[in-house]
Image (cartoon, rainbow, N blue to C red; front, side, top):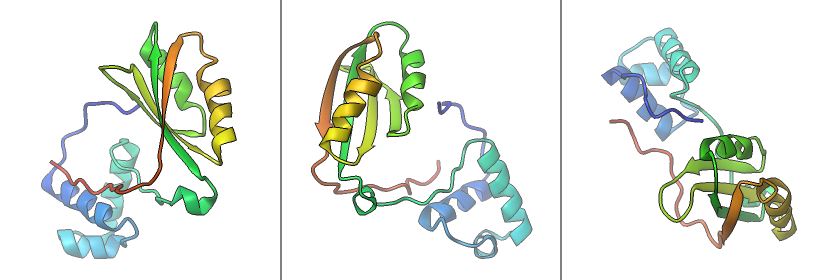
Length: 154
């Protein structure tokens, strides 16, 4: 799980992160020019940010183009320890997002599936099998309008 307390970032670290949010494929040399550091210094800082869990550089793909035609957000109501259930759900490879919430649902998960049959299997074999789950509500994605990861730093 992602911890809510983040290490303090200096202005240079924030600028490095913003450069990577703009283009995760930027070279350390080009980032260094933009922030006033050497390539080695940028590499070192990115490695430390990654090791701390604050930064993750990944390739963001289009699930549809990879054969995953169904995505959904599933709201879960449950009893007992929500953190334990959330950790158990997070193990499932089809579940790419798990968050504890306040309100109508205790946990929200996002799933990426090959088709509706795959979604049904996940619901029945990975989610509803937990005795703590009392109800689920599945919100099927019809069309992705916006998805971004460049919210900057504060």
